Structure formats: C-alpha cells, structure tokens
Image 1 (tube, rainbow, N blue to C red):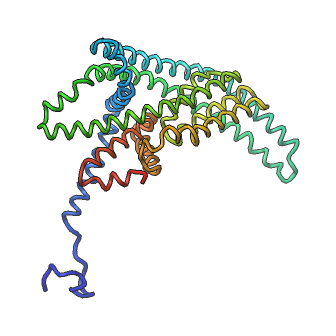
Image 2 (cartoon, rainbow, N blue to C red):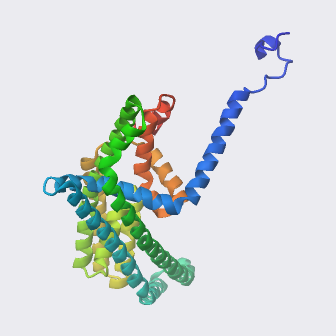
Length: 362
C-alpha cells in the first residue's frame, strides 16, 4: 500500500501518520529562538534598558530640537538640547532619590502613626461590635503587624529602586547626548550602508516608527501633566508631605497602563491617612484624588489619545506582564512603546502581517 495515502484511505486499523518533520523543526527553532531572546534580554538588561530609555526620550525631545534649529545653528541647537536634557534627567533622578530617602526616614513615625490608628480602630470595634462579632477584633493586632511590615518592605523597595533610578539616569543622560548629536545623520548612514530600494524601505519603516512613538509620547505627556498637576495641588493644599514627589510619581506611573495609575492613586491616600489621621481631611483627599484619576481615565485620556496606540487591551496587559518579568518597573514603562514598534515592524514583513493584526485593537 502506498505510504502517501491518507489515514482514511488506509483504514481504521492503520496507525496515524507521523507529524511533519518540517513543522517540528520550525517549532523547535522557534522555542530555541524565544529562549535565547529571553536569556539575552535578561542578561543585557543593564545595557539595553538605559539605551531604550534614551531612544524614547530622544523621540520626545526632537520637537524641541526642531524649535531650537529655527533660532540657533544646528550644532549649537543640538549641543544646548543635549546638555539641557541630560541635566534634567540627572536632576530628576536625584530629586526622586532624595525624596524617597526622606520618605524612608519618616518610616518610624508613619509606622507609629499606623499602630495608633489601628489601636483606635480596635478600641472602637471592641466597644461597638455586637457579641457575635466580638472575635473579629482579635485579628486586628495581626493585621496591624502585617500592615507595618508591608509598609517597611514597600518603602525599602522604593528607596532601593530610587537609587537604581539615579544611577540609570546618569547612563541615560550620556546615551541621550550622543543620540541627539547623531540623530540627523541616521538617514545618510542608512543610504550609505544599503542599496537604494532597501534603504528607502528601511527609512519608511523608521519614519512610521518615529511618527507612532512621537505621537504617543506627545499625547501621553499632555495627559500625564493634566493628571499630575491637580494631584500635586490637592496634596499640597491639605499639607500632605512630599507633594512634588507624589506628583512626579503620578506623572511617570501614568505611562504604565492600568496598574500605574492604581498605585499612584493608592500610595498618597495611604500617606494622607497616616499623616492626617482619621477624620474628614483624608476622606476629602481620597475622594479628590480618586475623582481626578477617574476623570483622567474616562475623559482626558480618551479625548487626547483616541486610538493613538492601536493595541488590544489584552495585548497591553500581556506586554506589561512580560516586560515586568524581564526588566521590572522600567520594563513596564517601556512595554507599550516597544509593543507599538513590534507591531509596526511585523506589518512590514509579509509573513508576519497576521501576527500584527492580532496585536491590533480591531
């Protein structure tokens, strides 16, 4: 009987045909490539993280470069922008690190305040709970200890990450200076390295990437400012400590979809409760901050962004999880821009276009 016959032609007594060797080879090669990519991303993180951050900041700063070029010579405009941007990055990292250290120095007072509030809550429940709920108050001391430990761990991690941010800000600043100085020479280098048709294709893809990332950052910066400024003003008005720090944290956390805003809203509310105590003031602060975040999420962001990202929400969540596992909080900040770049590149490869459509929101 011919071996090329199908299973149905062979009859029910014949075993199924073995799987295609080519398909197995392709699947194995894909798994090996994915494992190698994951390994390289993890091992080369100290190099790639600041490099990609510098690339994204370069996109954000190029409009300022175009504005300076109309008033200064090209070399002078690039030099001014490079030095100013590197200085701002370094000072921002220094401010974040110092504010985190000052907040950590306040930890004993915050823990004592939290213990006092837990004690008040325990006494209130003990005096007002019905008998059948009297045992509930026994769990409060363990909750008090767990809350204090979580607060210590969270602030300790924040201080450690702040030190990493300061060091990485220095590296990003150096990368950014050289990228801004070389930005205008990229098209000439591509045309010199590739054949004319291939060079124009690469430049066309690079142009689409540039337009997508620049548009995303332009809109996201506006939306983050609209969110961060009211948060800072509310915290300053009620005397909550470190309002500039929380405002800056809100600004940057807004670049992390879904999860960033939740953390940026919760952390200052907890601090306001610990600092101001039980009463109407922390309740008003919490209400105002939640209202500002909801307005930003449901009114400001949709009005400004529309479909600027062009990614499915499920794809955004998956990219957040992947890049967090790979590079931590920096990876979450880079997740959406990197996924947008991946989608554009896949759209320009014939075999990969179906995968690009899977990443889209339509």
